[in-house]
Amino acid sequence: MIAAFSPELVSKIEALAGRYPAKAAALLPVLHLVQSERGHVSAEDERAVAGLLGMPPIKVREVMTFYTMFRRSSVGRYHIQVCTNLSCSLAGGEALAAYLEAKLGVKLGGTTPDGRFTLTGVECLGACETAPCLMVNFDYYGNLDAARVDELLGSLT
Amino acid sequence: MTKAPQVLTEFFWLEQLHRIEAYVARGGYAALKKALAEMTAEQVHDEVKKAALRGRGGAGFPAGVKWGFIPKGTDKPKYLCVNADEGEPGTFKDKYILSHDPHLLIEGIVLASYAVGIHSAYVYIRGEYETIARRLEQAIDEARGAGFLGRNILGSGFDLEIVVHRGAGAYICGEETALLESLEGKRGNPRLKPPFPAVVGLFQCPTVINNVETLANVPGIIRNGAGWFLELGLPKDGGTRIFGVSGAVAKPGIYELPSGTSLREIIFTHAGGMKDGRKLKAVIPGGMSSPILKADEIDVRMDVDSVAAAGSMLGSGGIIVIADGTPILQVLRKVAEFYAHESCGQCTPCRLGTSWIRKTVERMAAGRGQAGDVDALIRLAANIQGRTLCPLGDAAAMPVTAIARKFRAELEGGLATAGARP
Image (cartoon, rainbow over all chains, first blue to last red; front, side, top):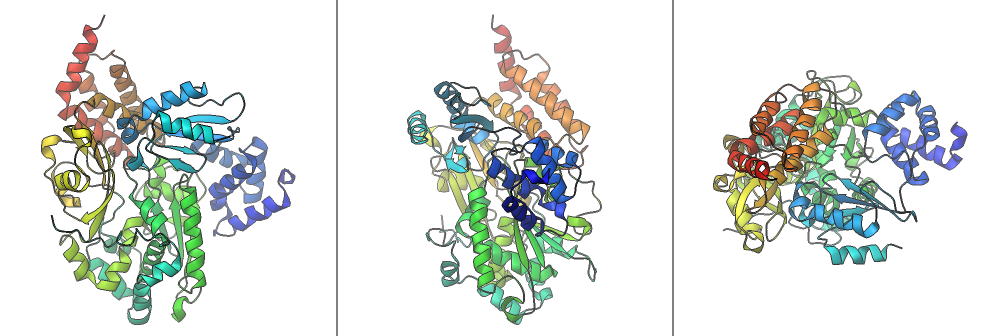
């Protein structure tokens, strides 16, 4: 199963594991790495990670399903995560989410048929001073209204 | 209003502050040089104890006392975990320290580690702060290159390595024992205490866990002395606080002010008052889990003890301002949804209780509220509070109880209206 990973990826994983007194501690960083290289973490990837870190595959599955940032299937090229928690809600975050749903023609959790956008509703992103806010992949955008969202979506080709 | 002393955010306007040259040019790493050359570990620890530095993460525990819980003369390795898992809704202050002034945190980490005799530190940073984590790693590399980290720091014989570890989107991992589990590569299920992390922590070894802002205060304390720090704040709660203000204010953002500044002053003087001339309805003073204060309850000093005496919690200092016209049910719904989503599921009262609270509130919001719902919410919250392994249960229960008690008339009025609908 380890053959599923390129030698480069395996050596990056081993380097991460070397940063901890116990290899298993590298699991979160390793899953972030695998996900960033492969778009998501498949069942086969889980088994390969388990083998490299010396743990049963079920331990990897437990972690995959506990943390919301880990994905077992791929998302669109632009993953839009819109905050609907309190500070954003007070500034129209739910209306923003509804606007995005209408604009993209998908519900929260959906991906556009062309694979360009995935829209997800998330809890507080830690950017309440710029409410309402969202993330596109790992970039933050705040103080949003319909016009700014249109402009943002237009720039994401 | 006197000009507030800004000791953490003073240089945030410098565009390149995150680079080591700029940090050193403004006096950075002077405290570390002083400590390693002139002070014993005990002296550094004593200075922080004398400074009455209370934890900035939420619980407000004195940092120097916490360090003192680490067993003396243990032959096990000791660890420092930096809690940068900023996830309490309404909180965004640590992001500014991490992104604008990462070397301030690094210097604080080295000083704390020196005081406690730690040679390995982990910064647990929330997964969404990916860009910031990379910036922090760059700063760590710079610090190592300049001899402030790594082996034999500044020729003192003291060694320290720092590893940045990203979380992956679980609020519970801001709870210190869940953070430890997560750092060990597991689900973030909190541990039963005791044993406390100071004795059995990361990898079963003695561990100190401190918030980012807490550690960022240490260089100033060492450079200028505990007396200076105490004068900035209060005798039992030294220094300044970085308050994050969001919601219906004219100028949302971070405001560094002395511990004990009044909540009214923060909102109406510093954050520019209410947005669009709206009237104040209520304030959540210290992140979502802190009990709500009504508009006539905001003459409270924002320090750990004063906010507690007012029946709420200073928490993370994340202030959420709610305007008249915002239905309290909207606030309650957000609170209920959040904790139901973030309960780790380990303790039954929290797993089921948060879920029943959410269902009840969603039913009320859908216009299908029933007489007795408000009492049911108070009862459900009481069945969670104090009955769980970790403080998430209390965090979920406290705001529900406070909203239900203080806004009963509005909530029950809503029920009547809903019932009257055809």
